[in-house]
Amino acid sequence: MRFDDAAQLRKIRREPAVFQWWDVVEDAFPFEEPDTTRFTIWVDGEIGGMVQYGEEDEPNYRHAWIDVFVATALHGRGVGTDAVRTVARHLVRDRGHHRLTIDPSADNAAAIRAYEKAGFRPIGVMRLAERSPEGTWRDALFMEQVFPSVVALTSDESAS
Figure 1 (tube, rainbow, N blue to C red):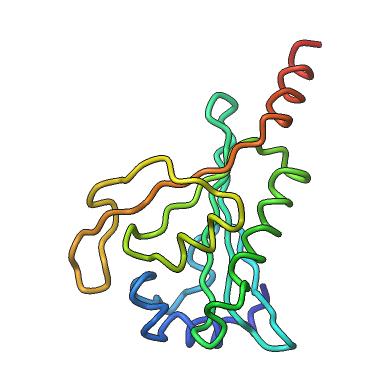
Figure 2: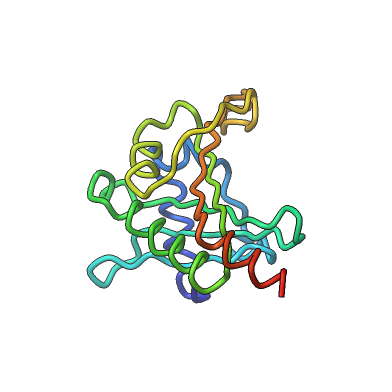
């Protein structure tokens, strides 16, 4: 992500179809969360959205989470699914994670479909887990993707 990407990413976050799931855009966005790794999504030479991840490095709870938003004009084209798959591959292959999570609003059917296409499976509903832009609490669907081969590799390494 480049500093020059910020204005366009803020504009996309303010689109009604994106904003309803993502909340208020702060002036510091997209640089307000230093513990989060963020990438600009580019489509045909234009900024199309953002994908981000965070990591829990505590060895007994190690995992990573992913989140994404895509410009309204790109909805339904597989852009979000591709971005999530790409980041998931990086987190497993390069960062050594065996478990990834994502938690869309339970009402966000399009996002849930995209994440299922990327390999995530629902594991439960988190009740009243996030505040909507209107200020009401709403449920989130907790989804995960697990990579047992990474667990086996990590266990073998720690045994030696």
